[in-house]
Length: 58
Image (cartoon, rainbow, N blue to C red; front, side, top):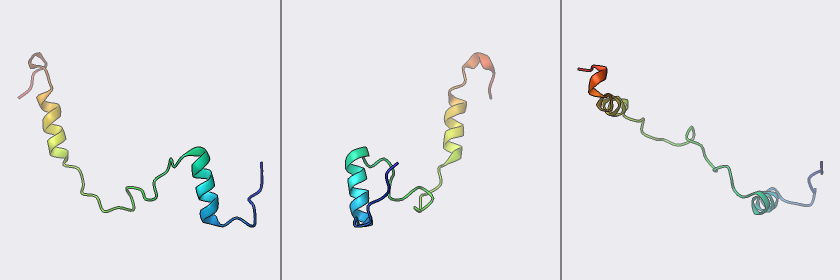
C-alpha cells in the first residue's frame, strides 16, 4: 500500500483518483438532499392493478 504524497493537495488527489477509477460516488447523497417522499399509494394502486383476475381481488 502506498502512502499519500505530502506535497499533493486534497483536490489534486481526488482529481487523480477520479481520473484512474472514475467518479463513482456522488458529491451528495439522498440523505443530504431535500427530496419529496414517494407516493406510496400510487405504488400500491399499481400493484393491485397487476393482480390477475383469477387471484381474487376487489
